[in-house]
Amino acid sequence: MAADGEEDVETVTGVALLADALRSQGVEWVFGVVGIPVTNIAPALQDAGIGYIGMRNEQAASYAASVVGYLTGRPGCCLVVTGPGLIHALPGIANAHVNCWPLLVVAGGCDQDQIGMGAFQEWPQLEDCSRCKYAVRLETLESIPFHVEKAVRSSLYGRPGPSYIEIPGNMTSDAVPITRIEQVLPCPPPPMSLADPAAVQRAVSLLRSAQRPLVIVGKGVAYAFAEHEARSLIVPRRLPFLPTPMGKGVLSDAHPLCVSPARSRALQEADVILLLGARLNWILHFGLPPRFSRDVKIIQVEICPEEFSNNVPAHLMLHGHLKPVLKQLVEEFGQWVMDRDGQWWSRLKEKIHINMNINKELASVTSLPMNFYAAYDIMKDYIPRNAVLVNEGSATMDIGRTVFLSHFPRRRLDAGSFGTMGLGCGYAIAAALIEQRKPDGQRSPVVAIQGDSAFGFSGMELETASRYQLPIVFVVMNNSGIYRGVDSETWTELNEEPELPLSLPPQVCYQEQLTTILARRSWEKEY
Ligand SMILES: Cc1ncc(C[n+]2csc(CCOP(=O)(O)OP(=O)(O)O)c2C)c(N)n1
Ligand SMILES: *[C@@H]1O[C@H](CO)[C@@H](O)[C@H](O)[C@H]1NC(C)=O
Ligand SMILES: *[C@@H]1O[C@H](CO)[C@@H](O)[C@H](O)[C@H]1NC(C)=O
Ligand SMILES: [Mg+2]
Image (tube, rainbow, N blue to C red):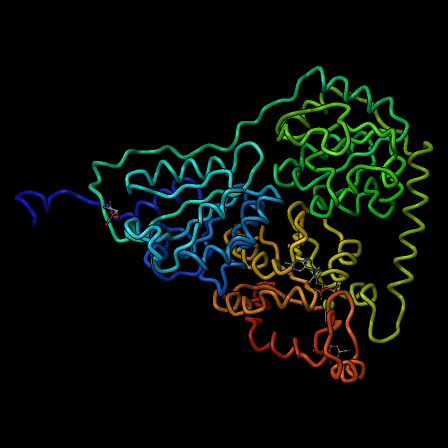
């Protein structure tokens, strides 16, 4: 019943409000699967100039969105329906949480007047998102800009992580008068706090007097875009450095100061470790003996104070943002340079030499089927130096990590801190989209090298890659199974047995399927 003059009141729909808020908070990519009640959000996003990518499963969508945060420093968004949609996105939420990456998940919820009634796809979604840094069910349309800003800010500030916004179904078709909307400013990048100068001073004098210093470069350095600062600290001082799996490329793996081939010795014998944006979790053997020296002194550079002294008491705590803290260290260090011919470097160089020769020998084995080293030795010459390499699986990933060198930061994407299988297709799609938006000449090709099991988790997303004509090369490492497979003969014998716990059928023709589905031409055209 429109009273006189009411039709003049300009209104804005909730979905337009949401799209505008996301855009103004710097969210550029949304991955999702739509349906009631979020169907009309996707076109609203596209109208607002946000890239919406329709995926085949929320799991891959949530992984894709999570890696956007790592690659760009601004959260990607995952858009899902109520109940099962949100549940399928939980892996990406957990993956972002454990990797410490920003992520925003927007889910439909059941209608506000049906909560508790057994509504369509009703599920206690907020409870499932309790690990998020911010989780809210919207109550009014007017509050959308407020909550989007808060969710994005929470995902980015401090230790990054996931945020969650639920929009009840009955709000997605509603509108409010524009006059009721308050402007919310875009949240700026996180503040860059410095470490305690006294701790910086002590850290530098400890490193200078160390017998066997080591710098560990974590993926936090890559996330902080602190590659320039890390190089300025490490290279002029000739400090040995060891990247974590995704810290690879912050400094080139081919750099003479990189001690990855002598990883075990470096960890075991170092007496002072400068730990940059990395945690002493399972990936670094908890910092404990026998993999680390019992007396090692850890200088920890961390954004999240709760992380200090986990598993090993931190000798020095440098709390702050990696970019400015690394600058502080550089300034404090002055002209000091480590002796490349000293005892520590000699021990490291000796081990590097031995281990590199072992790998060469493995690569030269010509038996069939080829071992991973031999296959990778051939493949590595075809992978451009600047490629984004998505690498998951067990042997596929572990051996890939040693054979494929990273020369640039944020170019190696693997199972990460959560050891997640099945994220490769989503990661590759997100990476390819991000590369496409870069200016000509600055784009990197995307190559996904996946185990046959890992690939299978989200293999259908090849269709997504093809639909959006993304130039991705997918390589499936066929060993018919998890860790190791069986040949056709053994498979036939085993097939009579009820259990084949690690095997996949050897006759699967990945190659045929990939070439049919893939937009190969766009790859050939661009690279
Ligand atoms: C989500 C998830 N499910 C299961 C696992 C257990 N897992 C570890 S590696 C792996 C697959 C390894 O096989 P494949 O991808 O073929 O690599 P390969 O070692 O054969 O090269 C699985 C299922 C996991 N890490 N993550
Ligand atoms: C949604 O339902 C709630 C609870 O019944 C009600 O207060 C609100 O006005 C409804 N919103 C719309 C847009 O229908
Ligand atoms: C996968 O490997 C098995 C065992 O070597 C082989 O029989 C099969 O043909 C391979 N499949 C493809 C697609 O190459
Ligand atoms: Mg396998």
